[in-house]
Amino acid sequence: AQKVTQAQTEISVVEKEDVTLDCVYETRDTTYYLFWYKQPPSGELVFLIRRNSFDEQNEISGRYSWNFQKSTSSFNFTITASQVVDSAVYFCALLPYNTNAGKSTFGDGTTLTVKP
Amino acid sequence: DTAVSQTPKYLVTQMGNDKSIKCEQNLGHDTMYWYKQDSKKFLKIMFSYNNKELIINETVPNRFSPKSPDKAHLNLHINSLELGDSAVYFCASSPLRGGEQFFGPGTRLTVL
Image (cartoon, rainbow over all chains, first blue to last red; front, side):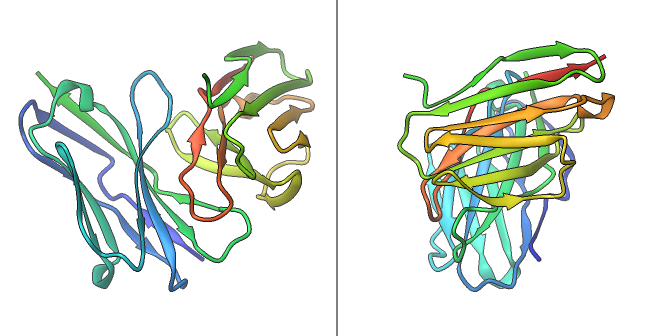
């Protein structure tokens, strides 16, 4: 069985603060993918990043960065210099590699509120 | 061009009615899904189809029946609607292995 835990239900920060969203996962698979999705107040779900389990390189994209640590089964997401437009629900998800069709397990989401 | 589209966007109906939600993707993906997002924003997979074949069928009441007429379409039919069915239903698609999922805009179903 696989599980994704996003322990932070809600986070509130003031604009320009840095914020880290935690994601811890459990899986018996040796090869898998991890994802982050964003759901802004408008409701759509937007893909942010995919990371393969065999690639532990961290990634930076503008103000966003992701820290994947296989040893601690974590895939944390940091927003630097947060902006009001970053306010959204963020979901972490896990997908085993050996599957004919991707049964992703989603975390319960973290609601981020960035105040001006 | 819309990658994953759903119709309708809003659906308000009475208990006991039967309704359908349609989904189409123009990305050429092999796999399509239905998710239910409840009022607490929890996302739960309901069904997954791969090349028109049902792959994943989570513990969903059999009042819910997916139908995939071709690889680009996955519709969801719901019989005898109940109050607890009120939620946002998302359709998604992805490449066969390891791909990110592209979500439709969601259908907000309200059962009165």
